Image (cartoon, rainbow, N blue to C red; front, side):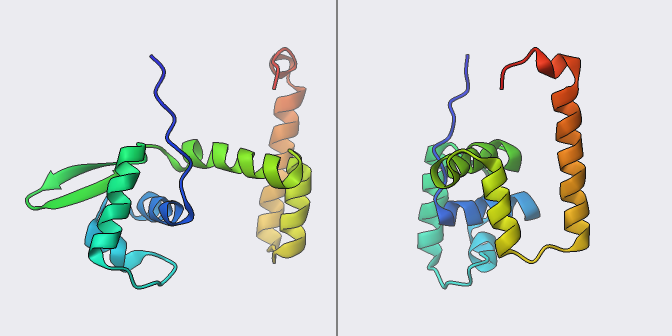
Length: 138
């Protein structure tokens, strides 16, 4: 049986997911206090966002006394892969190279980050050149 794919997260939902991926499971109050955009939000607003995310299949919770502790149902990679693929398709005509070119032109990239990008490109080239990869369709 195929697991249903959660709906694409909104910007606020992405902030919540990023927070939970970094910090681990959290209560409504902990999420409210740690949201990175710095906007003041009522407890009930954050609670509603978490409940909607749970209905979308993005989060689950466990009860600890009167408190719910929320955690993501998917990994960062599982969630961001389709989101980024869609973004590249919509904004860059499906070209990862064009997206990367834009990111490099618009960002300050450290020598360490450039080295990591070169390493990732080399790894991808090695994968593409392997006999096993040649028989697969992308």
